[in-house]
Length: 485
Ligand code: CS2
Image 1 (tube, rainbow, N blue to C red):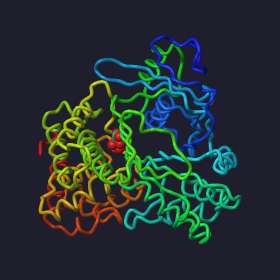
Image 2 (cartoon, helix red, strand yellow):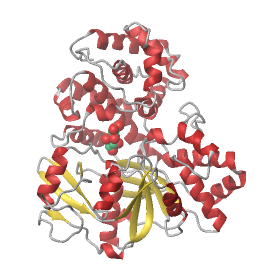
Image 3 (spheres, rainbow, N blue to C red):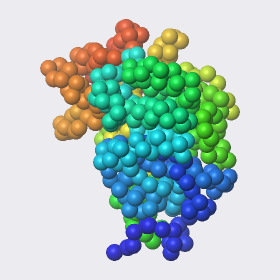
Image 4 (cartoon, rainbow, N blue to C red):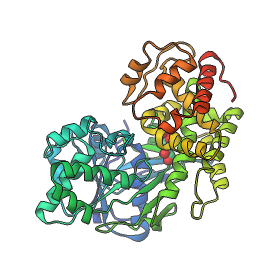
């Protein structure tokens, strides 16, 4: 049995090691949500920044739900392997800045104590869209969200992201210590502004003075994050072991491309991320965010829904279908047409690069993984740009295809008649809504357009566009081949 990865000594020469002394690190960042994306993006950026620019920015991580990743990281003294894959080969990088992992469900007091510790100057988040608890219709706090409701009722013993952040900030204010900077790294437009609004609304419900203090003292920088990171598989663990000589249960794999655009508003210092290739500190991130959400994530969702219902397991397989690859490019062009110029970026070249990234043969990114949580992803990726495109006189046809594909996917039955689980926080509501609806494009689209709060009135009120969706959905329901639109 191979020894476990627990230290940097004696690793295989193919493993690339942190370029600094880990013992000099001190806790400075607390990260909520240590999933694969954090381990492929935030942690390696910080690792590289410490190597290039110095600093003692150690990271503690906390999982608000499952314990596995946190346990594996603790067993490995915070170390794990990031595999970077492309057609020229796979490289293994052992990533060093994680010091400790906490499991909030097991020991909530521990996490609260870390949030209170003035040494923690940044609290970063990759918790996925659905964990924030915002109402997609208003952008404000969703009082029916299970975590929000529970935490408002029991503010000193939170369980959700917003509850923890507010309680942590309240404790700092009570003690007279400086706040931390909350740093959202989720795929939401103006993620910092969204987070700020939720935190302020939550705080004003429990303590208006706390709200004022947060508003006056806590910056909420927005960030645009990008790196395609499939869920780890047996091949990930096998290759990590082969290249490091150690068993690693926290290994992840990702693509070479990595990008992070961060608004430079921090209360209390930050690592010098801008010294690392791919990171950019800016005043305003929204132009980059819109570009990425609409061109990359919008096309990703389109390919994921069409691909999944068409029987393609991975995005790279969908890209092998020339018709679907061309459709993705057409959608990127349509998305680009909704954007203002993005500083320093040529949108044509960006789209070409996205096509190449999606087609990367060494990245096994499941269409089913991307299809998850559609109700949380559609608004910013597809529905907002579709609304703008229609306003500008476009037919928004590729958006109609994407929405029809999501609706076909929402039926939960594949072409062979087999059922699959719709992994979406609103899955039960969708199933109930569709229960007695005939499987016809018109009827199914009408029912799903009625899902409260999801589709903006400007879309559902556009008869030409909704008919287009209904017709395309009918084709997707009837055809047992994937039609080329
Ligand atoms: C994907 C993203 O799962 C999804 O919804 O579209 O995770 C995508 O891979 C990343 O945002 C790329 O940066």
